[in-house]
Length: 399
Image 1 (cartoon, one colour):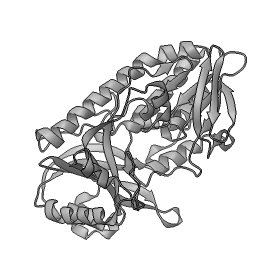
Image 2 (cartoon, one colour):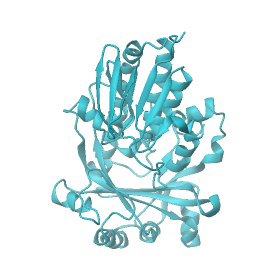
Image 3 (tube, helix red, strand yellow):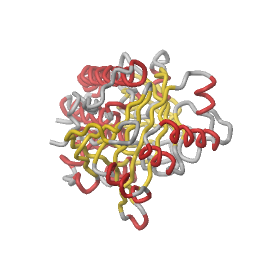
């Protein structure tokens, strides 16, 4: 049974991992407050997310949501050659949603009074009895458990593990979305209902359809695409990551931030290097954005009454399409551990840590291998199954 007074929990970061952790801890009997530094509700640029059972477990098991209402399904994996012909196809059923849809679905499960926007955590200290959390506006609050879900550039990770830094993988992705109806009929037919892969020397592009809420909330099908390209660390990468205001960003540039000359160079490269159907998708995207690819490995996730979850702990390359799933799995396991420990925070974190470290290391290793093979070794073969999955390759497939 849970302790007489509910454990007070602060979740630092209100994105998908923080939301899932907050809901699972609330259901385990904790009093949970989410502090999100952003001043407005989060949006994920319409970017696509491959749904893994771990990603949607809270929504299916606790909220009884029919996942088909918030996702599209693809039936095939197709490989396209340089001329634009499909040279290999195999049955491959995956569900896709968008960041915005998942965020909205999880937010609907939460009392908004416990989700504070514009609340940036700037520091914390702990003692035997609890954690003192400091906010940028000068407020301080006490809690029994601090869950740090503050993402890839986690300031909590920097405070707790200054030696665990982001390691650039040697390549980045241009990304974007384009309404399928903006493509010609043959291209639309080729890309709809499938994940399409194109592997080229030291590079690859994939695209898949996602639903995006359009005008008046009517969902529209968009092609969500990622083109991975090798860019050397240093001046070349820094030039790409410098936004229109001349500010060098560390990890990514949202839509409308990349410099016009960089976008024009992308369009020119697409015309010169990509199969015509994929070139038309890239060149038709008005506001492509940039994500540099990083690894980060942590030796610990539990620190007394404080823990790191999701991308605040391990940052894995996108090739397993498991980042959101990993964060959700961390949050779900945390709720279970708190329940099993009867609200004893320190015991719960000790019980929880080993399995999540193992999971983080395994996902990281798998994504490193996939990235090295396709971007550097040139050993990725046409027809290989996707490396999508959380616990194992293929566990994101729709059964």
